[in-house]
Length: 124
Image (tube, rainbow, N blue to C red; front, side, top):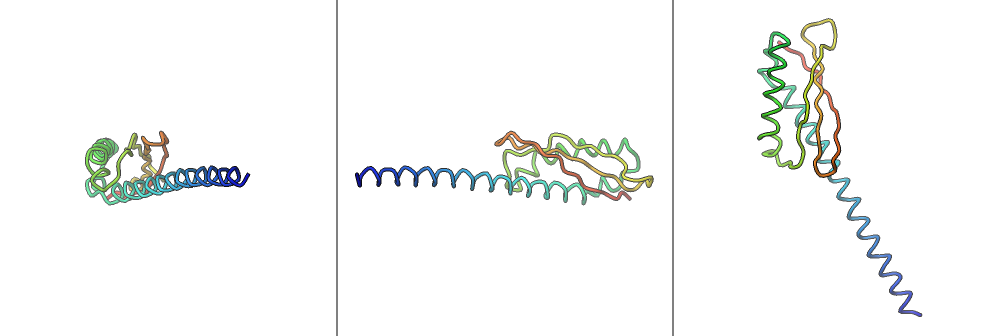
């Protein structure tokens, strides 16, 4: 009888350890994605070529360049894997020609999740 109780406790203990490890990994991954979102947002906000763009065509061209730069080198060399920028779009925030909202979508290949983030950028 005591052996059955001990076996029950061991089984429950192992199940709890496995469950805790899985939840811990999910939390770690969510934190990594937020870190990538912050990294990408700062990179976009501080891009000097984007800030010097004078029309929508130049901005759109720079968005394409930024997506290539971010996905090919910047995110991975910053220590993050399995995350990429799938889209970058922009629209004018106000009647002012200087303020734009830039939306970017991050795709996490590990959890097959995607999230949309945005930054506001003042051009010129």
